[in-house]
Length: 266
Image (cartoon, rainbow, N blue to C red):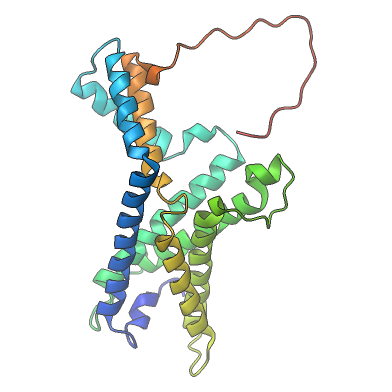
């Protein structure tokens, strides 16, 4: 199972051009969904207007080398490790889900476009990456969904309560889960059985829901969050601080006070 390219097996019954066309359609849905969301929600307008205001209040101009160093540090530290979440379970779950999804998607694209022809032999690394990425996505995603969501942990809502904001994580989990189930049942070589075909259909439907629901979900945060993190660090370096006042000293402690429970929200 872990060494077999499931898309190569699928191409024995479905033309590889059709599989590749489906991926291109999903990419188009991401592009148009993100663009429409930016236009409707005016996210990009706010981002650029805020950056323009911050530039006017900057205390010094950053040189190209400084900007490059800040951007590189932000990508390596803040974005790649989701440092804004601090140390804890929530950060670990997010890192597992994020990097698992990246491995899952990258391996999918490479196996579909490079190794679905009849004469192609898929290197073992790509199916391994695909399966490991899907497992990481499931571990991080289900851990977050069942135990770490703010409304579950701090507000005592049941884990099965679903709102529109949950569309992204649920469809992403469905993709990884049904993808693994499809690969497993496919590896059993069940001739004239329905198992792998049902899981393949569910895998396709969950992908359509994930990429077709970009406009309504939090999918686009994968593009906004890195940009916001870079802008924040650049603003701190040039002194503009995103038009916010400078940090104040911590308030003095008077007496022993009351030992309070640590907050469990953001």
